[in-house]
Image (cartoon, rainbow, N blue to C red; front, side, top):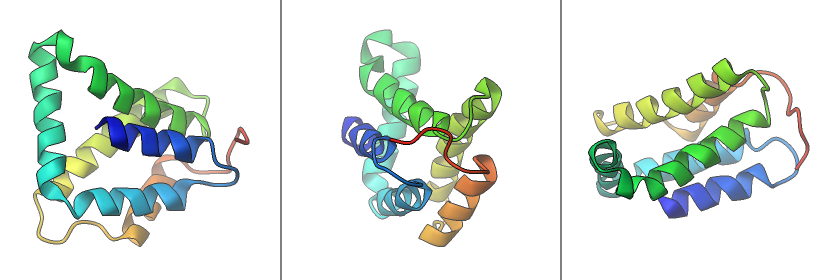
Length: 119
């Protein structure tokens, strides 16, 4: 989870529109479902054991910072963070997780418009 957060932080800091790169990363994450299951198991454990929240906090902060490149609306940012986790969990429950194009379309639907802040 810390590695995925660091990767997303790298996307936040790149010039241009990083939505396609995020879509590619999410597709890649879905190709290793065992790792993704372990990450969401950590989420559930951290809900009961706050001392485990460091990695989950890094993930949430990285995704939040990504969304802030496209929206200053705290509600839209929170919806994006929650939707991304929900979409990843749904991807675990299917034999055909989203393609890069499908991920990109979902990201653009959740975060429409241009980048607000250049890297």
